[in-house]
Amino acid sequence: MSTDTPASAPAESAAERYLAVQRSDEFAGLRRALRGFVFPMTVAFFLWYALYVILSAYARGFMGTKLFGSNINVALVFGLLQFVSTFLIAWLYSRYADRKIDPVADRIRAEIGEVTHEHGPRG
Image (tube, rainbow, N blue to C red; front, side):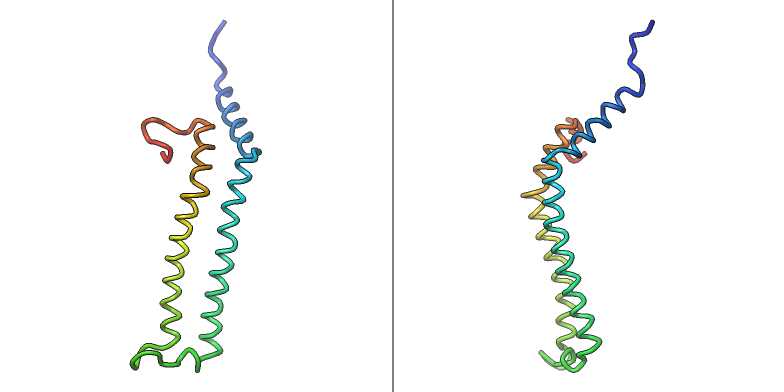
């Protein structure tokens, strides 16, 4: 007669906890919050990039318009603004995640017992 618990019991309870979290309203809200930022921002960036490519292909005169000096034209400014918009989106996402996503994710992580004293909430 053994008092040991079967090896599969802890895995089943962990799996059940994860499924319960996945079905929870809090997790659904977390996914909604993430999608509410990521999808619109992805569409906006894609449209901005497509505008740059289309103008470069079909509006060469406009894109070649000189703005400053002899080498700075609209195309160069639009190209540099692609980098600026990428960093802006990353910064906005970081702020959004700090306010809306991370607190909820940390609560969920704590509920399922993944927070350790050794590593903190982010492992």
